Image 1: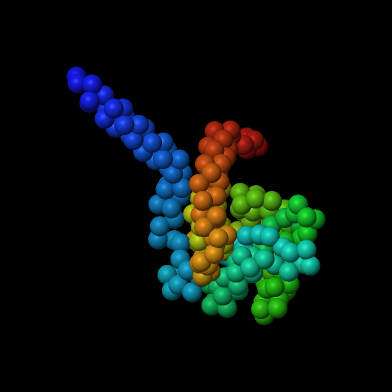
Image 2: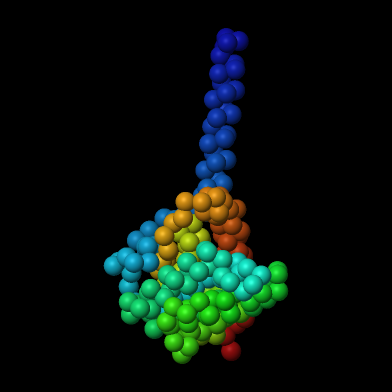
Length: 213
């Protein structure tokens, strides 16, 4: 082997390792997106099918009680599904007391009412501290078997995977994708967040629940 070929081989091995590492980092997100294919649509899409409810996921609330833009978009997506008759109720799920001591679900309910959804069509879940908890609460506390999850596009593949992992039939509906830094940050954040979701799903699958009486 010539001395000149040694740096080339080292560089090639390094590139191959980098590619392998990148593939490993992206694997859960790639799987989530693959399994969401065909069930993930813009909120106005004619491809969405009826479901028991829209599962509207919580997000940031400002100190004066106003929903952040992303949260308002999520509520608007759920309201659009309700107005089209695809769902008969909206499940507004999030933290009843977030890190700032604010109630995400109260802001969501107020927004939905302002947009014309009657109170009887709204269910608040203040114990949806994360997406998996929201999915479990929808199944166990509300008896739902099918949902259309409403969130930003970057969030939905992971959210839909978590919903499927607890036995829900799931679709995803997203509002317009905004060209702003928070959107790009959201796509980047989903890489580690989807790894976390994958580990949670594996953990909960490996540890069986209590035996049936």
